[in-house]
Image 1 (spheres, helix red, strand yellow):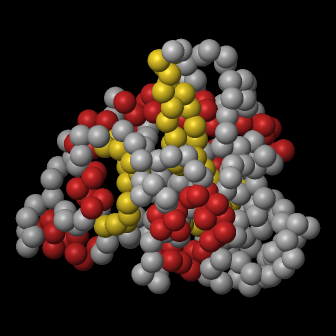
Image 2 (cartoon, one colour; image 1 turned 90 degrees about the vertical axis):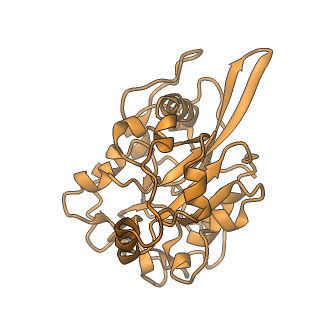
Image 3 (cartoon, one colour; image 1 turned 120 degrees about the vertical axis):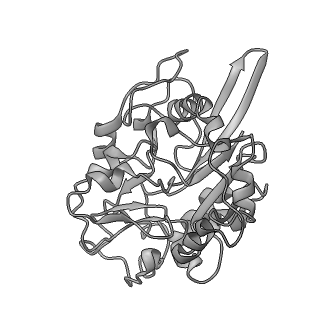
Length: 296
């Protein structure tokens, strides 16, 4: 199974991604330089291969920063007491050595969140490393990074997107005016605009049920009714967390490459993996402090 636009080739453009709406293509279309480094300044143009290379290249310098994070103090300390009052701080760790690029996470995400055409919360970017005959290959799953310092929140003119106490960045669809500033501000390309497209022509009853994402059950999907006309994104499957379940992408990962848990708990798996020398965050030099941590 191949997710929309996740398979890339030399010379591909983001404009060629099936999930891109024409309006978004107009915003982001830019040719990937053949044989170039894929580097690009800031957010915006370039295809997913370009994005994957830029994400990994820029993360190399930041890889040691995770290891330098101050260690949490022992149980019973003021630090842990403060963490206990705040509740869990959700984070995800993705082991790139285990990701086999099967795209199960992409499919399960779309099925769980019932996202429309052009909206894919989780994609697997693919890139080649090195030169022939010493060529390597890496898959880079890319959900929303749930940044601790999210640029998308800072630019929202109506405060429709905000960060919860548990660290998840959400959108209030009843306040979102669809200006799409947040899409332009996200350096990871993890936000999408819901143009109201539908799978109804391909699947009977496709619009009769929506996932209760963001904790709100909005009933059947209808034109002009939120979330149509607003911005959408991954929320770590917030509705599943509220039921005590893991995000769908974590539960269905065939390579056990994903881990999810409370980063503030020093005994949790994600906290221990985040302290690994293999750990790094994407584009940490931007100061976004993502809650998605990768293992190289």
